[in-house]
Length: 514
Image (cartoon, rainbow, N blue to C red; front, side, top):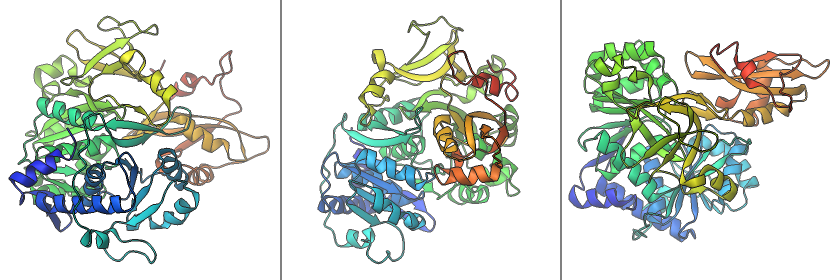
C-alpha cells in the first residue's frame, strides 16, 4: 500500500498516459516515474535514509507531485511547507521535524538566508524550478540529468509518509504524522462513495501543502488519472483551464467558488465539461450555493468534512442532499455521513455516546486517523484517547447518521479555507509594545467565511491603528492569520477564574452564539 504503487502500475500499463499538465508542460507516467527514480537517487546521494524528512517550499506545480513521490521512493517522510507562513514559522517546522533536505523554488529564494542561519538539522537545500539556479545552490534539475534511477525502497502500510503542520491551540504548530495506509485508505474510501474515473481530468488549484489537496492529487496517481496543476487560484485562469483541458472534477473552498461565479469571464458554456465540484474547508452561504446550482445545473455538488488529523474526508454530503427531497429534509445543512471504513459518534463531556439529535463532541475512528503528532506523545495521547480521535468540533447526528456541525469546541477560526488558532495570533499581538491585553475571535465574512478579528486593550497613553497592528503581526505570523479588523476596549470580559469570555466578545457579531 505504498503511495508509489499507482505510479508503478500506470507506468507498466500505460506509460504514455498523461499524469500532469502544468502551463505548457505535460508529463507522462513513464516520464514521471523516471524523474522520480532519479530524484530519489539524488536524495540518497545527499545522505537521506529511510525515515528522514524532506521538505518542499514552493508554489503548486508538477514538481510538487514529484517531491511527494520521490520522497516516498527514497523511503523518506515528506514534509511540505506552508507557503503563507512567515520565515519564523517555516524555521520552526523545519527544526521541529529535524528536516534534512529542503527543496525550494524561485518564489521563495529570498527566505533561504534566514532559513540557513536558523535551522539546525538542515544539511542540503536544492533549487527546484525552471531556469538557472542561484550561484552556490545545487540545481536539482541538473542533478536529475546526471543521476542513475534508484530502486523504490518500498515503504509499507504503517510507515510514516507525510508530516503536515497545523496550527496549535497553545500557539505552537503541531506536525500531524500520516502513514501510507492513512492516505491510501482515505483515497479508496472517498472514491468508493464518489468514484473518480481515470479518464476524468482533475484540476488542482488549492495549495498542495494542505492534506486535502495533496490527498486528491495522490488519489489521481493511484488510479492512473490526469490532472492540471495551477500555481494559485485566479478565477479567469481557472475558467480558461477548465475549458481548454475539459476538466471534469475540481475541489474548491467556498470563497473560490464565490469568486468564480462573480468573475466577468464566468460563462456556464465554458464550463460544460465540469461534472463535479467538491467544496469544503469553511462555511458556505446558501445564496452562493443556490447561485452555483442554478448556473451549473449539470454539475454534481458534494460537501466534504474532515481535518488534517483524519485524512479528509471523514464525511461526504452527496449531491442528493443539495436538491429535491434531500434538501427538503434539511440535509443541505449537514456535513453528510461517514465515508466507508470510518466510524463517527458524538460524545458528552464524560465520553458517553449521545442520542440522535443531542450535541456533543465529534469523535472518529478509522484507517484515515493519524499516527500521532510528531514528537508530542502527550498531545497525541490526549487527541487519541480511548482509541478515538477527539476532533474538538461540536455537532450531532440525526437518526439517519447525517452529521450536523454546530460549533467548534476549540476556538479555531477558518478563514478562506485556512485554519487559524487564536492563540498564535494573540501571542503575536501581545508582543506589540502598545498592547496590554488582547483576544482574537472569528467574525462573519462574506468573502472568507470568517475574518480574524482582534479585541485589544492598550497600555495607558498608547495608540495603535489597524495598519500598524497588521504590519507588526506580518513580521511574526502568516498574513492570513493577521487581524482583518480590530476594536479597542478598556478591558476584556473575564470569568471568575480569570479566563477571557470569548462568548461575550462574539455576541455582537454572532447573535446566536452561546
